[in-house]
Image 1 (spheres, rainbow, N blue to C red):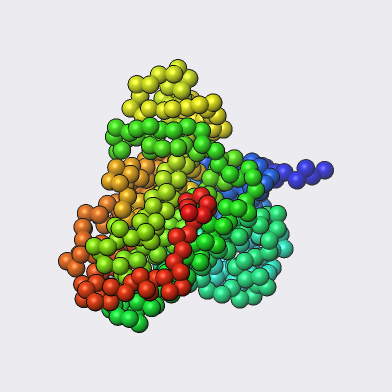
Image 2 (cartoon, rainbow, N blue to C red; image 1 turned 120 degrees about the vertical axis):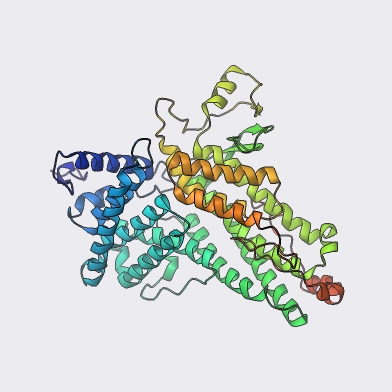
Length: 508
């Protein structure tokens, strides 16, 4: 009688049994499933990460695109462990094999509509995240485009199984990030009755689905901002900038209101306060509150909320910078309020980092002994230790790998926010480097280097900041500041300027 659990006897290696390569491949697969997949821990969050991958893998043929793509990703991830660098050569060979098999599958009318084909493409995207270089950084987006094309090809048929539905939500989440980075609107999804919204059911959950749906407005905002904020300033451009700013405020208010619609146990708690920091280049915690969440997926959702609002608030800030003369900004309520909201959102991302990466053992020892001579002084009252305390017996900690994987995008977004304290920017950059070194996520190091290069370039000759992921860095227009800039208050307040919501959704 079947128990519903996949049979492990179905596994067949891609190389002869008993060889050293086969043993390494098995080790890599075990490592990958341990470090980069998670089953749901709480019913209310209803999501793990790649939790469907193992049963799908056992149902796949040994020489299928899925097996090749998974082996490539697993070998690449495992090669980041000490003494395993030589496995990268095998990972690269398996990657090329997977690409060839996927191309063949996509050309087949039957295989093109299989769940395993879409998953194979997404696993290649994960491979790119692990092995990322400056030159290969755009390749991740190309894999996402391929997965989106396959979803469109499948249509509503994808929702006939729970696995297919989970694949849809995985593709959608990566598609939104891809479009945000490109400043390109999300294209309409033909062939599905609900479009990219998808059916709201127990798999994705109403609140979780709502946040992603709201975030799909951000690429359109950024596409508009990229054009409008670069036009020469005149009254017509100023009117367009005001319209753009109000639209960004509307989206930001909708996203901020999402916090009132989440389940109670999604809300985080503050478990301690970090009082100081001597060296931001090595500190594991940033000064301020430390958050604890119901699980890692809930923490990831909260940080997605924060990054979404950062994009909206940065557009609002860029609009204000174009409208308000530079010498008036520091004394302008609208400008200062936006800066304060951005700072609060970045601070909350920093507060989540210990939960993602695991609190250092020295902090636990200090809490337990009551010592106060550590370089980061902790003030704890009735401290609740997080559920994911690192296991001191091993350096291969699941919470570090998956937590670092989730944090890479969020820390990079936070790093690119303007007007941060220098110590915070240094800390964010070095947390990215830690993720690259400890978790084997090369993409974290690449984006950390890219961020530092942007800062090193300084300002352009016209006084503008250099454009980065979040900042369109509008150039100063001295002629506008001397003439049209005098009517900015009238432009902003003719329809009423809203300061919006605070970092946690509370109205300011």
